[in-house]
Length: 106
Image (tube, rainbow, N blue to C red; front, side):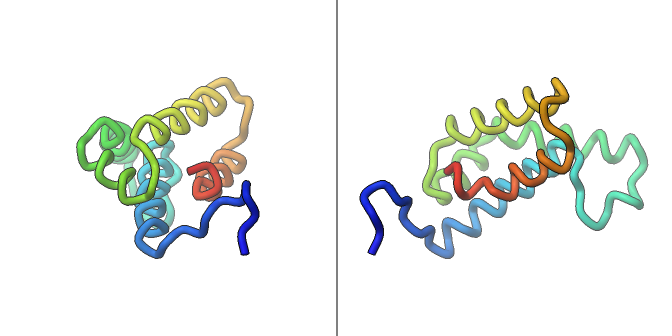
């Protein structure tokens, strides 16, 4: 039984939607998984721009809704991570960890 302030467990559909948002966040910061070694600098930059602009689309709004959160909440989290990473308040590893723990923030 969940306590009053414990978050509800996410459904499989919500977990899938959160995973999509996580992948797009990782791509926005250039944290590509297996393909990064084969990308040129221009390709990497382009993929990062595409991923970052995805957060301003209706597609992102749909995935946020499916994840059980709001588009504004996801954009705010992205903004906070961007600000902290750009100011060197967090390392790349801490950024990656923060994105992987996104489910706890949504």
